[in-house]
Image 1 (cartoon, helix red, strand yellow):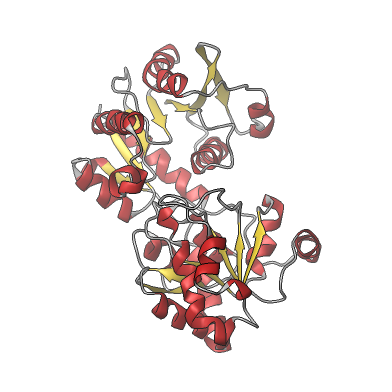
Image 2: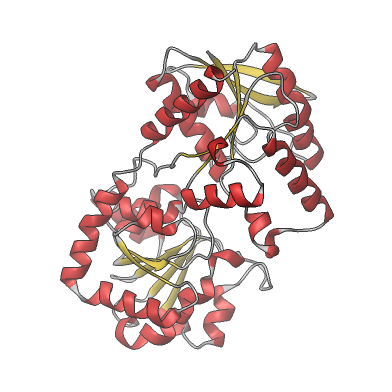
Length: 384
């Protein structure tokens, strides 16, 4: 069987779709070498086909591509060039690893829809062009042979909002990068401290500042918890801060000042990938109040480092966190504060959750994801 994958995001490892594509391309030839794999990437006004096997160096591969990104080129690539490439490659399956399948294809389509946020949350629907694109990919998804998604919560949303039969939507969980572990490296720890002015102990927030991330709840937690935790476990907020404060982007600096918790909050800015493991490991707890997630990778990364999660019981988060954290209504900052105080101050509870965190994280792996994805490919070809 010959599988071709859409490679639009292959040179963007900082995105979820880019990480997903890279992990699949690394794992697939290793766990199912009986099949052939090819990556389709834009090349000027056409496409380039790259055969991928277990010896392919993805880092070197992607450094050779120069993408000319525009909305028009992206739609052209997805709707015209990808079907043509599938035909030219004599593909048995076309896999689009993000929500953008072509309306028509000469071969069966497997599409991964990580989430349908623009349909679920009005803040993400955008203007006329965004709405038109969402309508296009929604219609195309209904014609896909099989849809993969990251969680049962997303599967439910896709079935109900896109009106797709349940047997055509399959949950395949993602995973954290294997580098996220509880094994502390003193060199990494020293580098983290050298690069960032961190308190000795802290609660960590890492996860973005757009509306669904609910950063205001994380800060409101400290209106209730600052007396108990503020001095010993201040809130460390990592990531590039937004340059505006409005209905879509919520600047935590503005909110912290408004609710008078700025004295117990530390903003450390963007964190390099090589520092993230140590940043998680040194946290007493990970605060994750998000309202909607297709998967919730930061929570899983924290668990893989042995860090308990305190946060939201919404969307996919309970599936990912399981019993390795304390999850409450994302709009109930007082309840979240109580949970956080307990996790930070009760050693027995913290240690038990930390053990559960490692066991829960071990349930997810990219190898398992790839094996289940191969099973999906084989299912669509066997039904032809």
